[in-house]
Image (cartoon, rainbow, N blue to C red):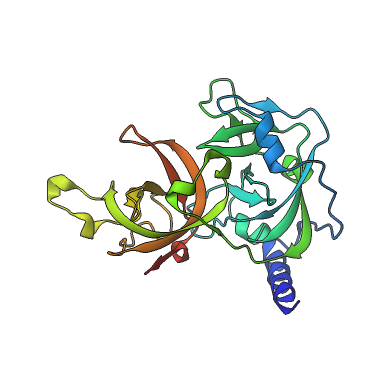
Length: 265
């Protein structure tokens, strides 16, 4: 009870910092869910986008944070059956939708599609776009789709090995232990740089004790992008993704949220 009260106080403080003239609204009685994320994934195939024409509602909790700028204008959430990425189209989402806050998503009129194996919800992308889903671009759209509750709870990553990852886990917050760096796009081999010079910026390939590989992606302007990747074995938290990478191979991937998402053994 004390922990939940603490998170609720944190959420209220976030609200106070948002905008005194147009404070975002909370609904203490969130709308009831009509389906879950796993069922939505079953209805949408990769490579296609679907416009939701029914009144569909899911209940979920935010699992990501854009505080360190590795996530940009989107956030991830889970409902126990799977994960989803909400294409919000605004910055500083962690002040409006703090990690652990409960949401009800009203999906009628939204577009569903995939990016790096993660089910996304947003608006319909332009016909010339290479993406299936675009951002919710206006306050009206955002407030229509996202209903916020007043329940905030600590989110705990699920612990898995690389070998256990599957596509239906894409979008879920996960911890993977025993990872060792083996490649990085942040170093310049022509300048005789080796892995001891590697930073988080770009793509970093890790290997576990079973020789299973995992990619980690960090945006160039993430707050920790230029921090060195420590030598030795690491434990990493992040959102599971899947896709093709610059070397032409396909990998499962973790997208970390902030620097605290890695720990040294």
